[in-house]
Length: 415
Image (cartoon, rainbow, N blue to C red):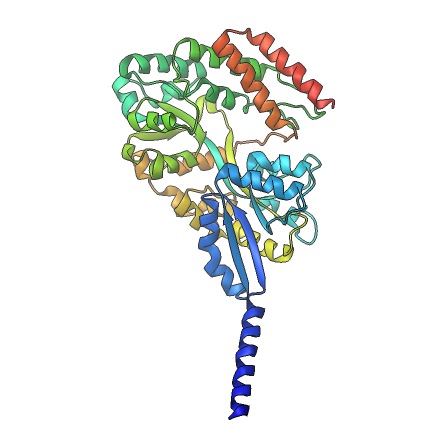
């Protein structure tokens, strides 16, 4: 009897040790919505290859997530094995040297770059040319507009897109006929124009040598157009992502919005679902090609399970089925070119009045060029917006505003 109990105890202990062995590896993934949901949806396929590895997803709101990642890379705190980053943070984190070079061995991403949309790979490179992240979704720029408001004003799509002059003039007609603002904030137009016509090797704010180019023609045009829109009272002075911004879409107070294609999904799913069928998508005015945002996967240099992290990243970025699933479920426009021929692109979008808008967005991906990133891009963005506010709200001269911004950036770059 005693031997039976000893045997039973040993069996239980062996079973427990076996269970512990199966659960000893935990791969941590830090993400923000809706990338966290995309990773979660891929776990059944992941477990087929790695049944002994638990994937723990740490999800935080967008801003909180990037704050936590900044802390993880700059302190001795343990970072996640896989880190999701929005485009604007990739360069900032790459500058600190805390991310793995995924282009080199043992990862070998350099040999796979042609599988991705060109500008998305360019966005993933550090200033020294290293691939520090893998693109998973992208934000081809588009003009979303209220079709019903245009009809009431007697306008057509080409009135908005043929030229910037026509765009602004249409705003005057729209405001008079419907009371709607042309755009939520004049800054939105500035943001688009400074992203257009960037020369090869240059960034948004700095040239290839790292010198400020804020006093260039791009910025003059952007500031002048923003001022023209404000002077004619065509913008609502509404900050993006505010409650007033969302309410403006719901109530038809804003007629157009320039953004990434993903905004159509946000409008449909939670921002203004009651406006289904009233919106349409178009290419940006004057065929201006630009991108808004995009998500990337990266591996911190101090990660614990780098090989497993790379396996998961490859599943999320190089597997066509996973890329397509994310596109269908979360409107995450795929960075993987192989997915772009799927019939899903030909399907009408009910929110956009059954328009086949994905074909427009796919076309945009073929023209967009990524600006070279610079470690001071975020600071430069704040400086430019501050000077634009002085122009719009205080009447500051545009030339003086750009000169002041240029001098400030030059001083900071020399530090």
